[in-house]
Length: 125
Image (cartoon, rainbow, N blue to C red; front, side, top):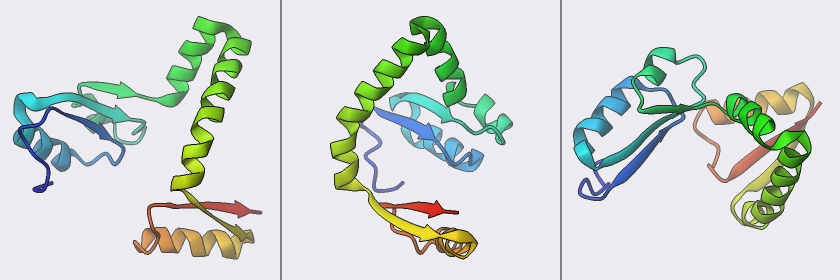
């Protein structure tokens, strides 16, 4: 975090649920922290409550389904996916593994910090 310029307006999207990190970010950026959003964090309720706002995908999907209807949601999702796919294929390296052994290997590699952030694991069971 020390490498980040604290004078630049910054948004923080918290996927990890680490209260000490949120506190440090708020202290470092002060009023330059333009957004503090907890993403998901269903098991991190106290941390999510300390965020400026919370984004939880199932709630957002339900809201958009009410707003646009199921067909409208599906059409927008398909359009967004078509636009996103070319970028995803340039930035994510898909690694396919099979069975419980493949799942175990992929999980242990991620847990041990041995997986490149570009790697997207797909496990065929």
